Image 1: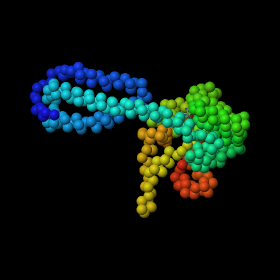
Image 2: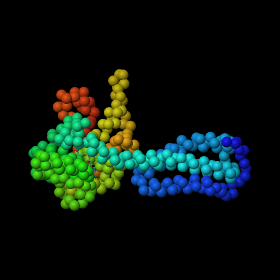
Image 3: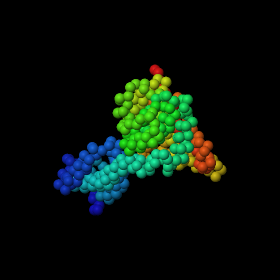
Image 4: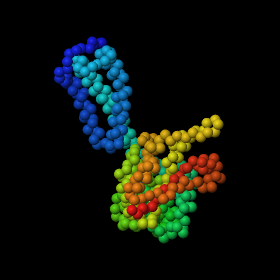
Length: 367
Ligand SMILES: C[S@@+](CC[C@H](N)C(=O)[O-])C[C@H]1O[C@@H](n2cnc3c(N)ncnc32)[C@H](O)[C@@H]1O
């Protein structure tokens, strides 16, 4: 690149752009239209990736500016011809960024969409009688153990229970076997088929399953209809494609929950503890046995590709509840079943030390 001397010629008008350069300049805007069809979250992500790529390209650009113009470029010091070069360079940098990031972002978006469906089909409940076999300690010794201990026959026989995000109906049928009248809803057709197969296999009359989105389904439910609502591992995957807290949809769902629950009713959110994954990853012990913990992604802005769940922070959770006249009346951090000790004493001790499961017991608040 020739080392141009800075010129003092004033910049009177926008530099003329050649046809070739113009083609360059048009290219990004054509692609920008592609963004309009995109999910706003993907769009935002794309923007930040483009920014990142430009940042990477910038040193090269700065180097060229320095070699072309010397140390500093000030105000009107640039000749038209040099400015054209800058335009072309910036445009090609943007084009380069677009070219790299668009296919990558679209691919990531598509992959993300399919992840949960694939997950459900391949690994999730191949056999509903053996719940989540690949990860059964948590479901069997933590979730199921809590359900068995907490929802006793005396407490729930004859009660109407709504299972929000019932999946293959495993827990709905446990509650039905104890005498509750259970209604389960899930938006996965595959899982509702499994739930109905399970219902038939167990010959249960007091449980029914529906496929659909909770918010659509709830519109047709009369007010104060259910004594209890359970959402087992549902809120973490309430809208599993999103990357950040979707306050609007969550509060809409909560407003329906509040409406269809009886005044004395309870809503139970039962799910993996929001701190657990982070703690397990971040816990280190120094040589003198001191505990070091950090929660790198408690406020999850970024999610691993294979884990598109969103753990609500306590702040997100309580502010959404509050808006719908709901409040947490108790939080449980249940210990695993003692049976796990026999099967895997090491894991049992680990689960005792670090909270694995969390249960929010939520009630309606009168104002
Ligand atoms: C991790 S699974 C848990 C299934 C079941 N509760 C269990 O533990 O066996 C979460 C379920 O919630 C369902 N879900 C999430 N958001 C939903 C919504 N808005 N309406 C209906 N189902 C929903 C998903 O389809 C998924 O099957």
